[in-house]
Length: 515
Ligand SMILES: Cc1ncc(COP(=O)(O)O)c(C=O)c1O
Image (cartoon, rainbow, N blue to C red; front, side):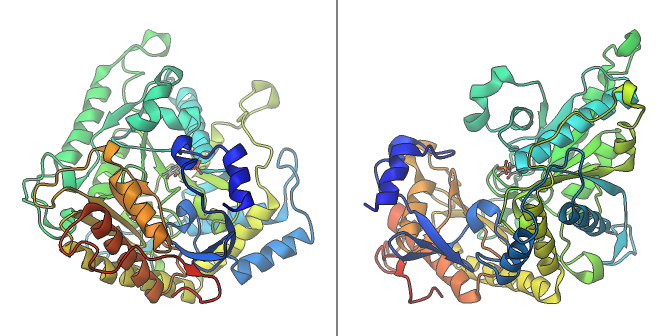
């Protein structure tokens, strides 16, 4: 065992990890990365199949990001945003506002054009996805209390939702495995059916070898459920401030991941769902809180953004401009922990007043607006916006789609769902029955372990294997990722020609190059 691995086992407690299992094998100790490749302490190379937990956009050690960081280091690494402004954070805020100011027009006859919609004008920086959500939640809570006379604003979020691990974000989440233990610490939120076409009780279609969204037979019952949830809450008419009827009725905010729920199991929404539910929530007076921690910065693809290019934010791809847009992970290209919550001048205005009125938003973090993170963020946005960056995303979307088609021949593959540059592959006992593996069978974990032996790293979500490569991953590397997945499924779960695509293999040694 490498000495670093031994030291890690002795002292480091890893997130979302059963540490007894961790201690059974030698962990991969990453010492280097380049492009889509990670190198471990033994010099073995791996493809980064989940972009280092969905953060990395342009690849590791990108020359432009590295140069931006070196330039910034030559000036200053960090100064506080409490009482001080700084250059890169100011520029990044302005750039985020500019890029979030576009939405796809969905009105009839508008074609595929985008139009300017500069509603999101204010940027509150924080550190990670959880804090971006926490900020949105606290702002929405206080905004509602101040402007609508509601004592205890109530929030609605989607079944299977995951919005982070701080307490407010956990309260918005609905994954029992992660959240139940902390139930006693949380405030109450409500949950509503999320579209999950593959396992939807209202989908009358028998299983086919295609993305379940494409062949579903339903009457948009998931949208009806959401409408009913709003109607129920709106009609409740609990007593509000001063005892007036109706003040507490309605939801203060509707929280959602647009286009695809990530940690819920990479569950994409059928076209039109987002626009429909966005209109319902707005019509009922709820604030729209879009969690784009996973979906932001072009992950979910599409071609309906400004100038027919992929929109950078998934909400805008169906014309929805939220009141809060939360971004993190890819904000710095995956280099540094930094997050942002964008919101409207209306929300901002509710916190303005004379000092003695104490309307200030009393919230902040030591590293809010960190210069290094902001410098990386600016460089990342430039790469995303450049024509080559746009072409690369479209190229990755295409090559991923082409390779994923090969998985349909495997009987243990129930659903292959791709949304832009993200894919979730749901493993089942048999595609004809959709019968899931019990969690204790660790099917996803074992398949990912077999992929690692083949030189591809990713993490499962239960029975769903995630592929979310950095945008720089070449077509050949994508082919290797998907081939490793197919071989691993055959090896671990059996199927026709079990192991027939070659044995377990080993990661490549450094120097031979991945591809
Ligand atoms: C949709 C979504 N929101 C919030 C978070 C929390 O982000 P972080 O882990 O950076 O706190 C995540 C993390 O995976 C996420 O996927």
